[in-house]
Image (tube, helix red, strand yellow):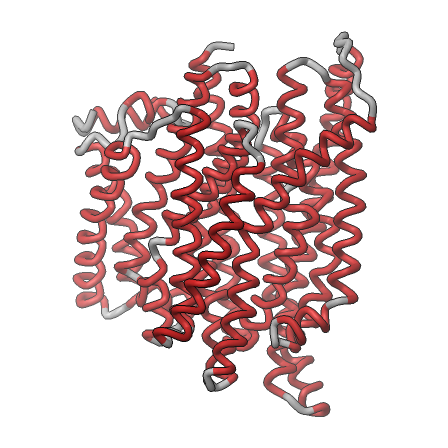
Length: 550
């Protein structure tokens, strides 16, 4: 296979996952709009708290599996060892069943402790119990997604993500609507009417997650059943002599998963630490419990939902980077490694910078459009934390890159260092400056920044890749700033004419996209070679040349 084909395939597969992630995030964002209106800010607090615990247990038991499996499978596929690929698949399924099943039981029976004692949000326990079995299903789905990614195709993962999110959206809204009324009636009998309604509504939202995971599992099993015939032929044709024992496979799987697990756990545990610390300190400082609950509801149910849409692109690029980077790194194709790291980083920054500026200039209108929230505090949270889009995108990608070049322990060390620094920073902001919820926003951003700095230093050290600061970072940022000016002007002009926030938001965003890419091409922030490697790249190049931008 030619280098050109390898280059193109890497970006196309990454783009497939990126597009699927965008679609999934957009669907996820859309269903959260009616969900927020149904369960309210307190319900969002319960929903978000349950998801914080669920996410950590998912990370510990299952989240690292797709990345690790894809890495191991890719290495064996590149060597033509399909018998060992099959053993990796079976061993991974066993590993996922044990870890996912154990975590599900711990979450189900420990829900009262986690929600009540640990995070001071006892009404979140109902939603958390609904999420418990989802951990097991996601673990199995993760193995199958990692298997197909390692085989070189992202399509099953992409389609399953979209199907999962669509089912999740429909069931979440419907179940939340009906269960909110159930909680209201129960609360009228047992007391705590508003809390019970919000708690049952939040549990309805998590039923969507359950249904979505079940859909993804059924889809991946169906795809594997279709693929199995051709896979069995590859196993029969495998003449390699390096047939490994299951003991060796399981040990390799374990030592590959554990560093990824520790890295992702430490990388994401900051959220649950922030939850506990913020609520404990805010209570001690005398803030009203209702204010604390609503602040956290906005942070987890609105702020993070918006921030995570562009960050999902980095996650997709990281997932697609690992198999290709592993193969290139182990084959000592140094130029290929450098190309893939640079291309992935440039791709992510081209998306992250305009999203950051767009969120900053339209913070208030976006909150009002999506969530009907005109509270200035909500808008200020987006303004203050918009830079986390860039930092989390880059740190997420760089984690995957380091794992792809066999530096599995380094993200673990970096995450531990950043976690300690962030905790100190949060306490300082809460006690020293009385920043309440903004302390969490700033600490969250600061954590990602520290990860970026540490990871990029290690990538340069171990891969020899020195990023072009002007081309990769400065030019997309400058084009984004110009776009931001046009976006803001378009919003206020349209608002004055239409007197409608939704119309003004949509039109300003539609105008911003071509403006951004026009100026990005104008200042040579992206060239014909890079455009041509993207899906439909030849058409993009032709359009740019038609307007004499290339």
